[in-house]
Image (cartoon, rainbow over all chains, first blue to last red; front, side, top):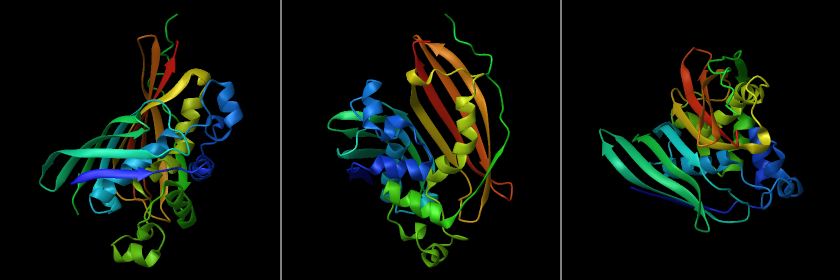
Length: 123
Length: 146
């Protein structure tokens, strides 16, 4: 099993994710504010990027949401809208229907999530 | 200056969240989920769910009302201009479905200083209306220049 997912969040994705998640921190939705605090522009929510890792792992294991038992990540750098995200992962342990995947997410060669570790159950 | 760790161990009152089908749809669309179980009740039931299930990462939606006030608590004293979300862990239990009532309790599991940065760890535990654990999470926020 190989984990790979590519997704390009559009310009207004952070606004939709803000509404869906309830996190309206202006660094995610207001490019002017974001630049004032030293960011390149409004940045993706880290938990949106983590959700792409969760989706990549779950889909690789057959798409059943019950298969994802555990996920941990470290956030690094900043994810940006309108740039392709690539999630990759490899199986590091497998046995008794249980799979461990370790991976990361990057944009343009910059890591935005590292040390992702998912535990999945085959269903 | 040393980091104020006095809020370590503090626990916040439980927060209740009722899960709805349309909120699951909104969240699932925002994160790009395509599995029909998140959108179609018949597909969900055919897959063995009580009702439309929430994607695992929907945990952020029902936990936010509990974790948010803990992160914002003036007694914890986080400098938000210097804060980044450093890491996140979720450990899932029973699936969450539309109609469930999820109660989340948050506590501060650790505050420590390392390399001139403050590490604030919040732990949240969410249970459903039957008292079964649905997720246990650890939220790590890092504050530069403490």
